[in-house]
Length: 292
Image 1 (cartoon, one colour):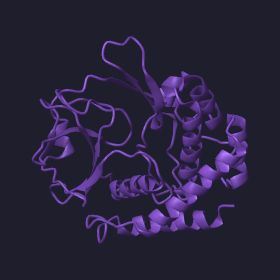
Image 2 (cartoon, one colour):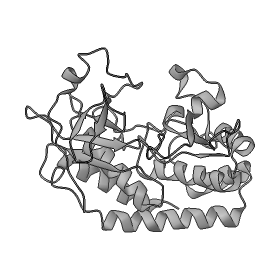
Image 3 (cartoon, one colour):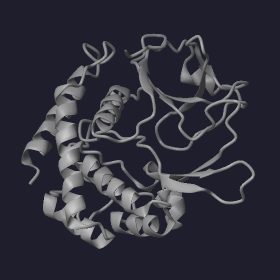
Image 4 (cartoon, one colour):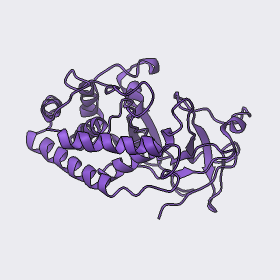
């Protein structure tokens, strides 16, 4: 059962105080705390447990709805995805998206130390150059750093394929990361693995982005990708052909099933973003049907 919360404070009021933590990125993101009784409030004097992502303007009012669909399709496709929900906003604003953080401790008893490092940092690329680089460079970095490189490289292959199938033109170097975990008292990270899926969104449904390409090239291409391109990437990354084919087939089947069984929350169905959300689903259906 999906639970919906209401945010009774506008982003402008949240950021009116210097005590509010700031988050990077172009999209407005507000740090929030979700109490055990379901109250969502700014994390000014509270733990920073959730991220609030309000709707945009000038044609981007549906951004939270599109991201909700993208993330839920990612969950259906088999990715680890943080808990998310659409929330009611005040003053007639479109619904916002709330995302639970996955890079923090889960309880007062949790003594693990976690560090999230995005691919821009991992590759030594400046944040402003986050759209440069290639999937091959990321694969090379994962091969030498991950504590389960074979699994993470398959995950990277699937992430690239998923981005193509949902027409996500914003999967840049800062929208992928590794999550490093250290045990209490340890001076080293015990695990370094691909982080859960985050910030996935179909971009082609927004103004002036109808022909948006992938943010990062794979086998030298960012458009008109076919199965052969992903197989070439797998070969370059050192992924066995049989494993690559199996992983792609699993993702294609799971995504198709997820699309057929996607249950839209009331805050999408009938909202200002309903048409763009329907357009997104058609894009995904078309790409699934023509992927060879």
